[in-house]
Length: 315
Image 1: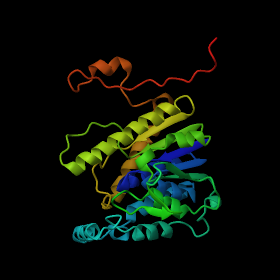
Image 2 (image 1 turned 135 degrees about the vertical axis):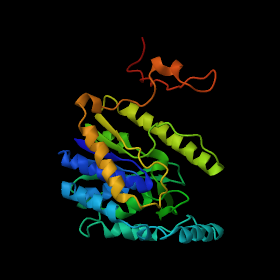
Image 3 (image 1 turned 90 degrees about the vertical axis):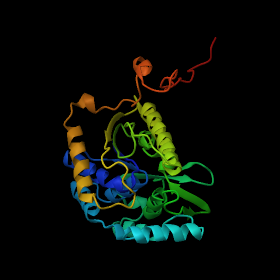
Image 4 (image 1 turned 30 degrees about the vertical axis):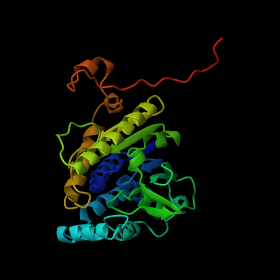
């Protein structure tokens, strides 16, 4: 059983669309789709038509979308909106009304519930009130649009989605690349399209906001390592990392065609590798390499080994 897992990444979700097109053209078809944040939007769209035609339609959406369809149309309007909503104590610097309208426009009218889909779809969101991960996809009557909007509610940028008295935000806060969900749901082969941070070297950062964002990115990366390690031996795992267009603002939609093309190129290149090279391993230094890492004096990179639970009582 094949699963596609789509990471969060804001406007870089266009890269995922290009990669999906390459996978479908390569004859790879998902039985399960798992998405977080921008990946939840992409997974929701492609789940309504999991074919090369559907993938081409998603690539077209990302190639033609204009900033004003989702965000304020220019920087002046953007920063004025930020300032007004901040000063008036709004729950997000932007309203999510346009994003919801955009998502709804691209969901077929006959496929608005999870039970309407031809494949299984799972979407994540984090609960600000209970600190847990919520997962949509278990109940056929659940609304796809609500799940997508909860998962795409990037904290501070968009207000939380309030459902049943809960404040739900971007699933990437808890699981930006939810590999283990796909495995737990029965996937035997998982294709991960990761447009988030995946361990690439980054320059020194300055400023409180930038440092806070980098700290969150580091936390999310450690979750990714745990997910990859946890999935080893349970499913064949292919990890496609697309690191182009790093640092792009979430509201910058001006590079859509180039990003779709780059995602397509990277995925095609990945598919061209020998099968053994496409199998993912934890992206952490091996034990042999730990002492060779350049870092703080007297410190090494630490990745703890997982300790298996005892299989029986001792005598």
